[in-house]
Image 1 (tube, rainbow, N blue to C red):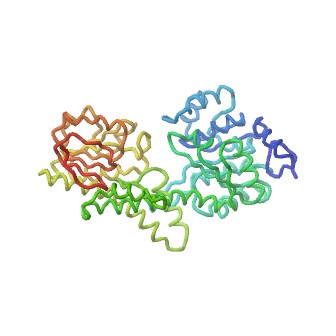
Image 2: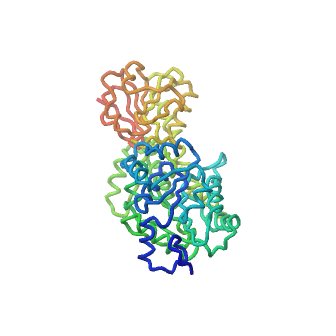
Length: 455
């Protein structure tokens, strides 16, 4: 067995000595992918080990980090963490993945896994990074995958690829799946202790090394599972649960008109029973997780998955439902959609976060524009409003625009200050039950609660 302290896999040194070697920087770390999740992870590794190279294909990202600046905005504590890590020479960044791999003994991959035009998982980014890792892989190295992956990717795709391209045998290096469990806006907090860390290696030694390393990053529990596929499924199942639960809430929410009840009220009361935890209905589901993860399973397994497929369809249709209700409210108020001006409030997928991936607002603004409405997009958080159909606007612009309808898609705090007293009674479609008592004489429709006329 290896006694080289810089490499942990197969080491016969005592566990405490291995931990100390990691903390002292004797185990060089490379983190591949310096985006919204990867850079906070690299910063935490740098804080714990003092010897991290971050890798990213974007030279602007690399240059910013090497200047001590975080290119990731609105992430509490990250600016200081990056500045400190660079000043202390604990973190450096490069676009050269092969060079970083040759210098590292611990390789952490956290690049996106997206979907192609047919909703099939696209592994090209992960595979490209794995090829770089393989070019520098040495006996005793450890490779940890944090990128969300379809089940069996580690054992069926990545392990054979690493073996083939590195020339090493499968038992000469560690491979473990250790999924990120973080959210934008709280990444450092999540990485260092909000939730237990899941690790699953291709063999017992891989799992041991992963548990040892992540035990130095988090104050929470590190939970080893049987293998990488189990760990991959843990990450996916978390998202699938939410997608299915939200679909239930959305389907119930669409019954509000027919049942003539406030479904949100019924859900809140039902959730007082400890075995019931129904989520909230809304204008749609966005982000880089929930809309994607079901396809990682649906498109991977041969077994039929009707529940997962139906949940996706229900949630995707909420965008259409939101548009339908907007048109319906306008017609009831005597305005055809082709003659209407509509202000869409909130285009990021989540309140307070500048992230628009898979946001419901993409479909909603496009559909309203295609129907002939003059669409205005209002979002104090989004840095790229011009990418959406319609014209960018601010809350202070609304009185001059005098929209016929307001549609709330994402409930930013700033929308507490809609200038209702300066608007000429627009109809309102509230997709999040977040516009508290809008002071308008126009009709107000809340998804999940139904219609109401404000005093």
